[in-house]
Image 1: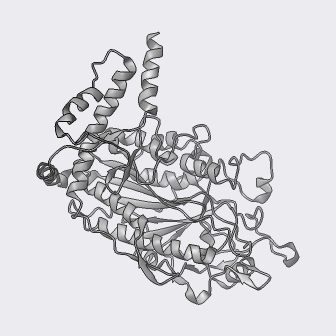
Image 2: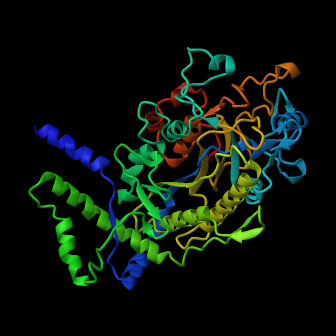
Image 3: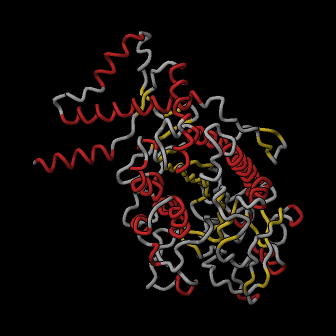
Length: 489
């Protein structure tokens, strides 16, 4: 009977939502406490690292984000992205932003050249400065799949329900088919949480509940621009009576209650009150010390507008600034931007999305370098992810669900100004024209040549996980011959 009770207790703590409550410290005291903590930051921040997942919800068409522009590739690109010569989602060559990787790419196609989407101006600047890299053709894999012949073989294990938004999002976030409810960001948090004196702030989402941050022992803390995403109300001014706060606090944190469930609930609430107090202190102290993003220019109407993604990243920067108060040495963050399911009106929709991404990522990289706690731009790495890539072939006004896709990694610890991995052919299989793309499983849905495990494992090594810990967090990684892609310093 005792064993059953202990198991229930662990399950209750693991599965319980992380509650929060508004802090009650006065503003001057909070600011003084924060200042005292910042004074000790020089020794504390030397070991600090953070990883930020920027998720493109809906499946980004990366073939219009990073493009091969050598003559054979460009011909294949234009043919695949045009329907009947009338409608086309191909971007004009003259609008593109050329990039020159440090490592020349030469393959069966010949010497490759590359460009970025015309609205990624700030990302091009980061790439040229060596602070951003492109990881080519990444996607969900259980084991390597060499080509479409192997793909059609029953001997190869493939990800479940390819081309499904929900299933592929889960597999991107988890990478472990045996534990689909736990994400690799959360599992890294499980391993490294002991380095944080206040473990509530190990895994933090500014975009709701995310499988990516779900650990087996760590809970994700959900935030918004004001602090905790779901605070407990009525703690500072219950029914308009400030004095009512103390008895209410005593009731909901009564860890001496006779009922087991009541005691455990009270313990969770008590920890949440303490966590929210810490977070409130940070949000108060960084309200003006962390620079706000400017507005971005919407390319579709040429109007300035607020950028909600930049606001999310500002909140992340404020928490990084408050790392000492929050007792953090290692943190994993999740931010997201939606709208990438571009079956139609893709050119206009993606133009705006690319402009927002470039603006927000550039702001984030810049603001990290000017934080009062010190220059954190070399200690924070942002990477992009998405449900899947999209078909290379146009459906007339957009693209449909695909598989492999290109992604960015940004930060001072990135070995930037390079494209990592094998950049795929910019052509779809066309037997009548004598074109055969060995990675094309239909309509230009490309088999990934880099697995999410390899992508994530490279980040995990930089983050501080040992070889054995990486093997535990990414059990499929051993199936891939290259386990460190080399894009992190």
